[in-house]
Length: 76
Image (cartoon, rainbow, N blue to C red; front, side, top):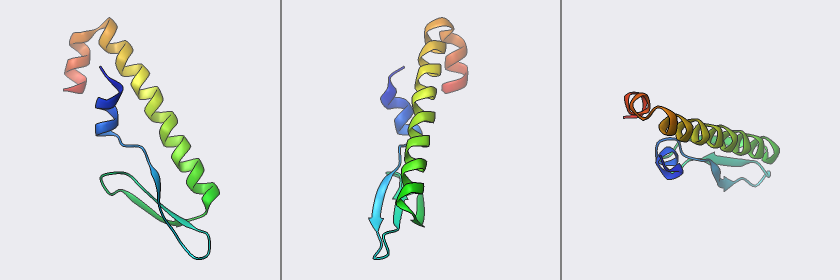
């Protein structure tokens, strides 16, 4: 299991646009959007999503290593 396969299904977030009042929009590559939030909240949202993705990568890789047949049932 490669990290990129997880990130293809569960994309990271990034700042998509900035408003004149300093608020930003956050989006994923496939278009999930959170609009007009404070930078601080955007940074928290982006970091929390990254933490979840990192944990999911580790769990998927370990399950694939120790129980590949079970992993295939879940992932594919």
